[in-house]
Image (cartoon, rainbow, N blue to C red; front, side, top):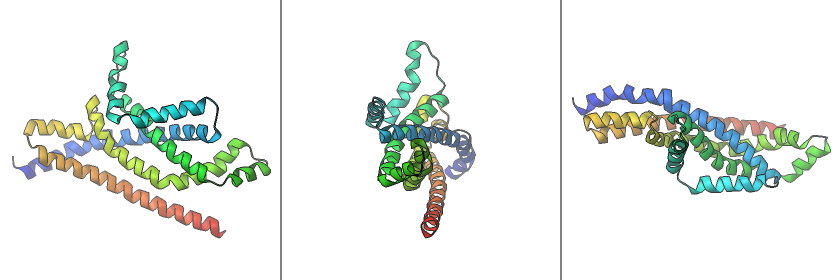
Amino acid sequence: MNTWQLLVDSFPKIILPGLVMTVPLTLISFSLAIVIAVIVALIQYAKVPVLTQIARIYIWIIRGTPLLVQLMVGYYGPSAFGIKTNGFAVAIVVFAINEGAYCAETIRGCMESVPKGQLEAGYCVGMSYWGIMWHVILPQSFRAAFPALGNSLISMVKDTSLASNITVTEMFLATRQIAGRTYQFLPLYLEVAFIYLMFSTVLEALQRRGEVGLGRYDNGTSGS
């Protein structure tokens, strides 16, 4: 079999795990990461005693250790206590916790960039603290954080390749298996790189459209 025929035959075998494993893994993990990030950012913004210190330690540990090591600990750690693990479930949890730490700092920074006067104005019109957070601070923070969060999502798509180390059959592991049978490593790895590039390009296009939409919204709001 020549190289071109191999690439044609292997393409559906690689992209299928991408659609049924890589994409769901990315979307579920990132959604959970945003929830974690918002909670951690709110705790730090409000300077909640004890919880703020716990949040800082969480961010310090996650940002200071490699994602691959975190995956290995999450996958093999429970087995030390006789607990069986599922690679896909572990990957979701680890990716969410990892990305949540980074996104929390992004959102916290954007929250702190909102003028404090808006918090005081909210109190003046009778809004509660959480009402101000939900209706005033967080919407502005998310608009400011949107480009950085979009970059984080694109990075997560590529980072899912690390899940192959804990038996998750995503695109990279599927490619490794085909390459192991055919010994055509370079062409196949270039092919999977191209597929990752395709996914990232789609997300970049959606990110740009989202930024344009938010820009129009801000202009309309300021114009009103």
